[in-house]
Image (cartoon, rainbow, N blue to C red; front, side, top):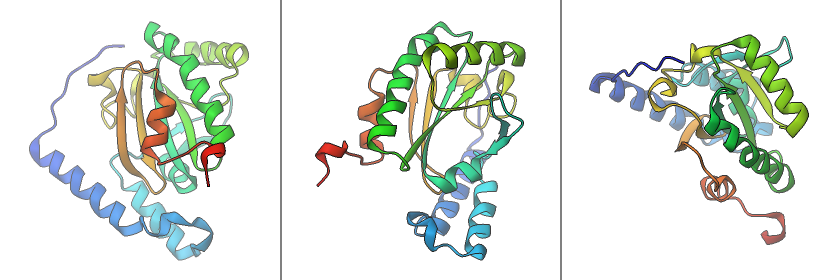
Length: 203
């Protein structure tokens, strides 16, 4: 992948910060309980999420379905895991992401979701490698495809920061944490980020 460094102007940074802050303030209270939303509220929240600078729509691995930022963040907290099958570091990271996903399924099902986003340049290679990984390692989480990071590269600074990188979002679309590079401590980071406890520790 060709990495091109780009600098964000101060005006752009301020605009993005204000947009995120306004969007979060508008629906963070509603995001606590989706069951209480009426259709009008749901549509308003979707509009706000679609106006987020982090918004994307990408195809899912092995499916004709496309998933987008708004729909994902209406359901639960989300950890977006950006990776490339061509990166040796990402290959080392994979078992720790699988471990995290298994921990979530056991201790925080419905509260947090891991969504992988493959940014390997070749879509054909993405498919073959991801399918092989899924078969051999039982990834167990949704993988979206963004070859060459054409959609998410600038929004998530993939072209400047590289992969692996993790973005933590609360339900409703507010970013709360970024983990750059290889990490062995994903479970503890996730617990702290979303104030989670293992089931055996919950009162």
